[in-house]
Image 1 (cartoon, rainbow, N blue to C red):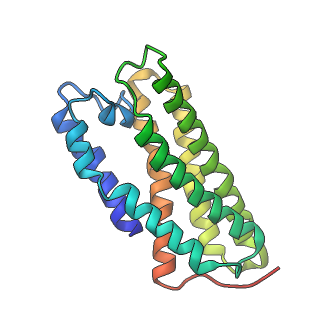
Image 2: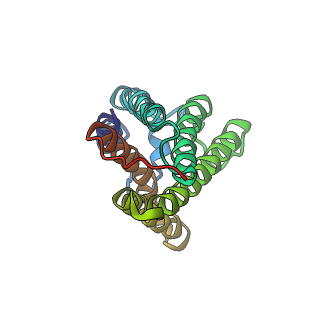
Length: 200
């Protein structure tokens, strides 16, 4: 489910611009493709139809499977990461961009608020997973994947703020794919039974 979610999101990001004349992926945000008045909205909805559903199913199955059999820090991190998936799925569906970024409508303000929550609920869980994964050295590979995801996410965050507007879209994609990619990693760990269980 995690891999299907990643593939669905990738397809939407890659192919939705075909239905959006003059869309510049290097300078524009991914959210522009799913804005309320975007010409690519219908294609985006089709291609990303499995993204949220499969992503949530994946991370919730992981949460159920691990139970309380991991150390508290690692367990909290994974559960918070699941919360991020819910906030992302519900928040962006309820408050898509209106298509006019310059106009700060209530809907656009809520979209930004959802983005802030998603960013925080991505960074904090990854830090918890890194710390918890390295404890007693039982889940080092998972902690390493979390560190890679966090590094990619930070590159995206720094890049979007430090780079010229012409490169905004490039760095933003670092951030959005980091979380989706790590969700797929969790799914693979569940499927391959790679979690090493232990208690505090």
